[in-house]
Length: 451
Image (cartoon, rainbow, N blue to C red):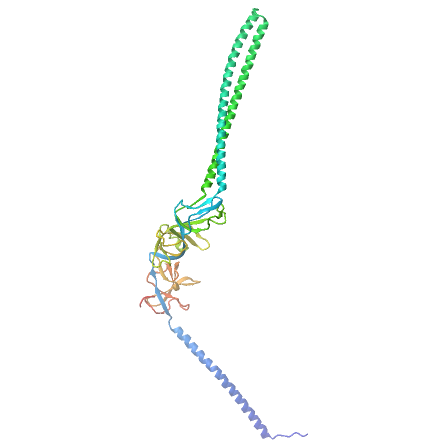
């Protein structure tokens, strides 16, 4: 098939149409690009203008003046009231509650009977011990009688010794005389031998009496030991009687001091066991004429606390009333966990307006060891450069100064050095501040003061 040839005029018209279409598309793209970029350029110019205005404008600051702190620092701390003396009373004897004479709220005196415990076993043991004591006393009397008898035997033995000695001396004299007569031949030798035999018999009798004396003396020593043993037995029996009498006295449960019964855990007929290791105590007695409050004082205030200083005690249940307490003692050591000093405050409660266990607040007025100034806590700047404040001078220019901070009192802090009374400091200073920068002071007189 033969192709159809187009004239040159038609080809030129197609080229012009394509060129027009490309130019229209390029123009549309340019219009769209300009529409997107132009607002951005406007916002950029506006941001630049705002940034330049911010650079030109001066910061506006709220200020406060440093003030010399009062001579005493006030510190308010919580605490619980406790009775000055609290005793949990246990039974000292096994038995049954025979009488219960008090109940909770009873006011008692020292030595007053709170309850009576029936102890039949102790009563029986006491009777047996007393009978044994009487037996021991009878045995002592028998031992004393035996001792006296032994001493009498010693006296008899000594008399026998003396008698035997006298007989021996007579026999010796007779023997000597008859021996001389025998030697002269006056009497026969048989008679001399008889006198010699009689002398030797007297000697033997003398030895026998001396042995009997020694036996009698040994008997006295034995009887004396019996008497000592009998006396020791009496002392032992007497000690046992006293022990049981003491145990019997524990039948009466007594109040250890003047106070109020705050707990009662027994009824009549209850079985009780002696010792604090038993399941329950019988009563609890509290002496509440003086109350004590234990509070934990922070380390920053601990060095200025002294026993004898007064403190004010506030109780919500007694509105408008203030109770004066006294620091009785401190622990003299800080708790390493909390860095606080345990302090005991005692309050006179003779009027009975406070109850042990009540929540209270203790206000201390602590003398300052040195003169300091106080500023609001939000005036401090703490960063890598240290702790500083932004001072505002008379020309309303900023100057940063390092300070040493003391006690933190919450809304205010103590400044130990670096500030003087009356100097103006900025509150919550912005990070963009630089030293020497001029600022606008909203309250030139300081917080709470009119310019």
